[in-house]
Image 1 (cartoon, one colour):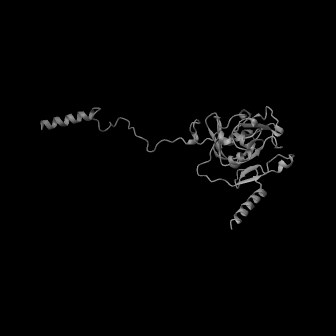
Image 2 (tube, helix red, strand yellow):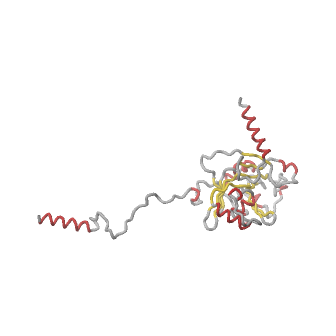
Image 3 (tube, helix red, strand yellow):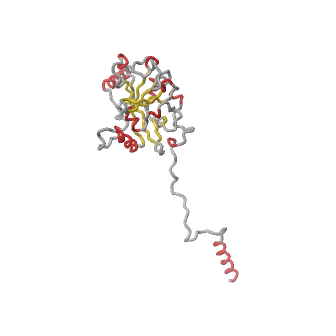
Length: 277
């Protein structure tokens, strides 16, 4: 019995020692792993260097018309100074073809300090002021003086921040909250919602840390595209009638829907379908 009692005392001493402890003291905090792992950083929020979703300079190096179409469905991202990221899917663009285009700011090959971004490498931003108070954002394409105007986005992230930014510059309707579809449904609205101003002129959309373009979500279908006339370019002759505005058919986020162009597009699809039989 004495040996058994001694063995029990030795076992208790081992349990109290660091090497032999089996259960924590009730007075010590219990350190447990979380039931689920912490939030993982999406590719959309990863470091811009080697960013897998970001579109590089090769994307922008294509003619204005093909680039205007290629923009549709891609995601424009704007990172504010406080780290907030505003995101919107491009649903409407306009192509401007350069010196030959009577509606382009570069018509005749004219270069000025204002339009210099149009003549810089593809992917360069050309931001200009209209009516002395509104900004519009363009992206240069292949070809001197050619670019794409971004006309409308479908808001995806940071909508409340967009709403606040739009509210600060709105005139006459300060008491009414903006609907989601009103946030980016026009070129100047888009710039207001993303806090884009003249300081972004001549920045490179392929490398800038505050604004960039990402590829649309994997597996997303190619949108049906409507080709319509551009907006607000009267007095440019035949160029005012050219179908150089492109938008996602049926999208409620576009600035102006052209029903006649949509009917023509639908008729063309139907004609192609009928030829299969």
